[in-house]
Length: 408
Image 1 (cartoon, one colour):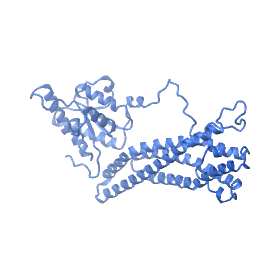
Image 2: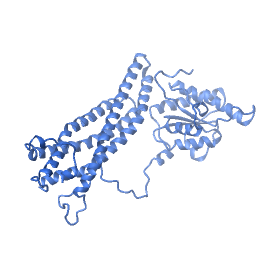
Image 3: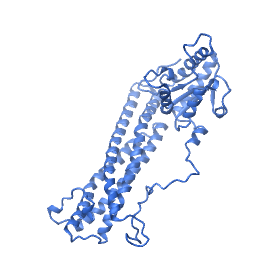
Image 4: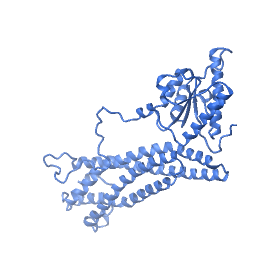
């Protein structure tokens, strides 16, 4: 007997099928196809979903919002965590939508069919066969229910098409994409300096121009990261509240599992954003490094005229800006570490949560690594500032914004 979906869950599978024509002439092939499809939906698919605590699966003819039907269907095929496909008669639309689905990793897809005759490429994929009889419905529903239970725990393997489609493409040259995250970008080596024969790094004006261009991007990336971290904290708090509510209502382990799966699904969108902004933050940090490091290198090598008041003031302004930002970067880095620690506590709940937490942890590690660059620059700038700038007088101690030309 089917049960109502657990309160607080909103996992709604999508069902693709050869639906036929509801308004066709009675007795016509299209009408019969529609009637058989409805029986399979209600007797097998819907019952199995409700029994494991999912919501009623949605079909394309159940989408009532305005818009283009193909676009709405494609979005469900792409975005929904669970898709159940009826391959009966090898319907072209079903096969097309199933093919699109097979391009997506980490998504559960279950196949059922009234007949064993299926196109070759999907014939090797496990498919639940059913017959239109009371016993056939019961047997198929039990098989679908078992696959759903295993799938909710992410105990399934991607099909060959999914694995191949998501492998790195080989055989094509990959253009260089700049410095690796664990390397510094091109800048003067210990052996060759700007102006030396064979030197291929950046020169001072070029390096500082890149730094000036990238600094606003760093600030924006930090703002974006802070917003996403707050979002994740809210998601974690909501997940813990859902688990506590589940325990209060005594829904047991199944209820906790569904609450954990819902928590994992809430993370998908902000997780994609966090990975994007973390990569951007690392790239922006890499872009500003040559100018900042070259500035301090020039000071240490005595390549600046500290007896020139204008040049000295520009150098000191740049150094003081880095010194003033040091505690800000230290706090930001600690916040990233704290957020990661809070989220990692949820990793043991269920595999879907653990998979997303591992991705989040990798993104947060990138952020911390990039921020540690700033901290190292700030500490180096602090030493230089105290040795050449302190004691100049109040008017020279006010750094203001870092200006390229004044640092020449």
